[in-house]
Image (cartoon, rainbow, N blue to C red):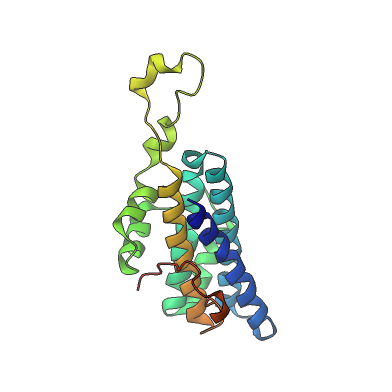
Length: 199
């Protein structure tokens, strides 16, 4: 688990270093750059929250945050892929007036996950875990075992952190697509853990 926590933390280091490199070239008028910056900030914040909850034995409680991270990371890939200005405007429009009921359609995320080769295990952890979140770890109270048949064990830290690391890798790949070479791990990192970024 320590390596997965380190890998999740490494994403922020790489994003910070990357934006430090490209900072003087950023344009406030560029819709794609603005969207990628905002979405990257959200992805990193959500990755940090997942990591903190997992470190405290509350991995199952991080599942809705992991869902948000998936949305941010794969939206970044979608924007960076092509038609970036148009796609950025569409993504930012959604962010300006979100609603919990319609904000994160699962069908769209499944399509993007397939397009960017997100591993099926990550898709399952992200999208098929609502029941685990709703009924997981529910026997933690005194005499809670009496009702154990109505609960679920919930998702574990290694599974959740692995999914977060893959998704953060996709966020980094999107940023590197926009600013080639600026968001890659520096050579001096040696044998630092690697993100699995898909296609």
